[in-house]
Length: 152
Image 1 (spheres, one colour):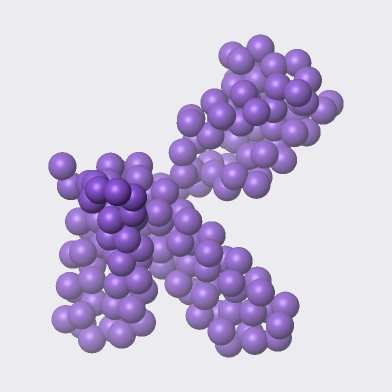
Image 2 (spheres, rainbow, N blue to C red; image 1 turned 180 degrees about the vertical axis):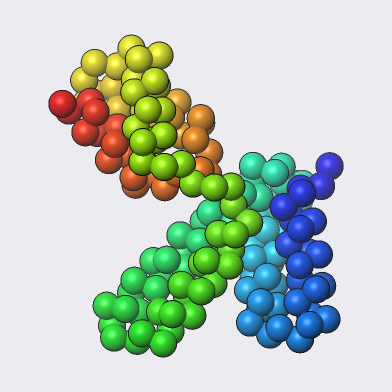
């Protein structure tokens, strides 16, 4: 079983190489390399599911966003722009992010289904919410919403 996203990345890499688009070729090679490295991580080579591939892509986006922020803080705006462009390119392969309203509704549903009443229940709520959301929301944003919903 092959991942649709990985197949799309590979096809887009071929297209970018034929078009001599060096920037896109570079970022696609990096991302495909990250997916391949994840397949080889651990004691045995494993084939990644679609969800696993999307998690790797989300991690790559997060890395680039963090790097862009570091470069911006250091005054290296040119390098920050490159990191941001790369993050946007990788993000285009991820499912659409949930809106703030959709995420808040999901958090309330999870709290109700888990029966959480206080901040001590945050671990259970986060586990269930993360399972439902997958890569469609930022973990920090999700955590902040759960914390505020359970605190208030």
